Length: 417
Image 1 (cartoon, rainbow, N blue to C red):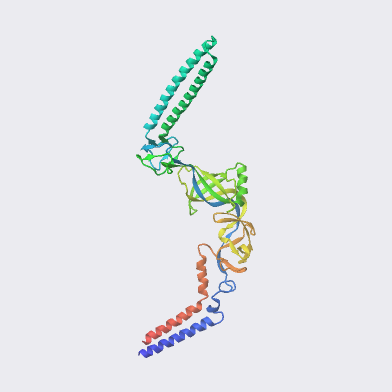
Image 2 (image 1 turned 60 degrees about the vertical axis):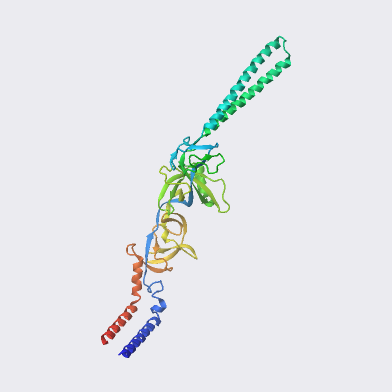
C-alpha cells in the first residue's frame, strides 16, 4: 500500500512539473513576457493612470530654509562687586522688566566706604575754606604793601591745590555710592530669566564667569536663516522699496505654522564657503511659540505671480532627457513633454514652458509608461493599484486553469485512498 502511494505521488509530481514547463516555456507565456505588452501592460490594453488638468492662476514665490531662533537680547547678569549674596528674589523662568532687582549683596562694607569718603571730603573742604580766607587776607595786605607778592602767590597756589583735593574727594564719594548701588543687582534688559547659577549665602565676585542668571529677551524675538545668493536680488529689491516681506516659521515637520513675522535685515556679505547670505526676521512672539536656539523651517514670501501655468508636483518626471511630464491626449495616449519648472507652493508648481492650461498630465501610474502608450484615466477613488491588479489577473488565466487541474487530481487521489 505504501509503495502504491509513493509511486502515485511521484507520478503526480512529474505531471505537475511537465505542465509548468509547458506553460512557462511556451512563447508569449508568463515566463517570457511576464504579462507585459508593448505598452507595459497586457498587450494593447490601456494602462490605468490618474491625471490632473493644467490650470492657470496665482502662485506665491517663496524661499524655504532652515533657521535658528535667536533672542533679541541675551545678557548674563553678573555681580559688579565682591561680597556675600544675601537674597535672590526672582523666580526661575519668570519674565522680568529692566531695572527689576535680581539679587542683593551685603551692602554694609560699601556703606562704610561711602561714609569714609564723605568724611575725607568734609575735612578737605574745611581746609579749602581756611585757605581761601587766608588768601583774602593776603590780598588786603598786598594792596597795602604789607606782605610780599611771593607770599600771596604761594597762598593762591595752596587754594588751588585744596580745590583739586576736594574735587578728588567728591569723586571718591560718588564712586563709593556707585559701589553701594552695585550691591543691588538689577536686570539690564527685559526678558525671561533662566536657571539660577548661584544661591544666597555664597560669596560672589565680579570675575565669576557664570554670573548669577542669564536673561533672554523673547518679545520680540529674532530668526536667522541662510538664503542662496541667487535669490538675493529679489529680496533686496523689496527691501530697497521699503516693502516688508512676510516670514513664516513652521515646526521641524513643516506642517504646523508657529508664527508670522517680517524680514528685518540682510547680512552685509555672502559666505563664500556655502554661497549663501544670512537673513534676519523679527517676530512679535506674544504667545511665546518661538524659543531661543529652536530650529524651525522658514518660508519667506517674496512675491505673487499672477496668471501662471500650474500643475501638481506629482506630475513631475525626471530622466536622461531632463524634466518632463506625461501629457494625456484626447485620443487616450500619453506623450512625453519636456517642461521648465518655476516656483512651487505646497503641492502645486508653476510651469515656465512646455504646457498649456487645459491639458491633462499624469499624476499617478507613470512609473511604467512609455511615450505613446495607451492610457485609461481613472478616478482617484477607484485607485490605480486596483486597476493594475485587474490587468495582472487577466494575464494569468493559465495559472487558474493549471491550479484547477491540480485540484481535480488531488481530489481523485484522495478518493482512491
